[in-house]
Image 1 (cartoon, rainbow, N blue to C red):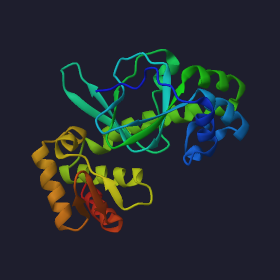
Image 2 (cartoon, one colour; image 1 turned 90 degrees about the vertical axis):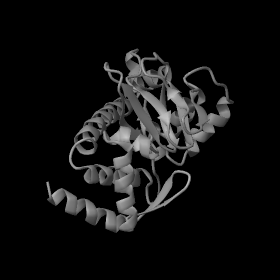
Image 3 (cartoon, rainbow, N blue to C red; image 1 turned 180 degrees about the vertical axis):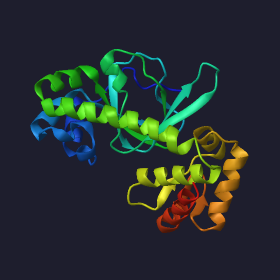
Length: 243
């Protein structure tokens, strides 16, 4: 797999303008900064596109960058001491990832593109310099770090416990959130879904089949589905009431 936390070169002026006009700026880390500050910061930012399966960064790699997800979905994988592979959370549009770089530590997880992904690579030196001068940025960093921790804890609590049906419904709901207003979502391959939800891929396939018959999902290839949000909410409500 390709790791993108390595030297890549694009024209700084082009990237700076991209930061100022970025469609996810309000959702991204630099959204708390004024336009003039964003333009100056953007001179050190590089935009990178990845195909599904390509790595943003490797677990344990001591990198020099943070990343904002502009498009697509990134998953975070971890290998346990027993050698088991775990997917511990997902990030989508506007998400800040790779904050470990600010602590000069290796990345806690392996970040991998699930779909076609566009990320902005932000040198940690840029963030460190701005955080000293801009208290709002420092607070935003802390808020996003806390949000990442909560997302990982919620993933463990909601997506790896309870009935298999509830876990799949929770995952579909999470993917619908990442899709924004669209009813079209990315749907993981069944073996990946099994790793995410700590179940056999045959079980994941069976539950997805149930959701298709109930018209909650309409799947299409290669890796997508259309979700009926109203039916999804009703099914999840019923499942939660059984607990």
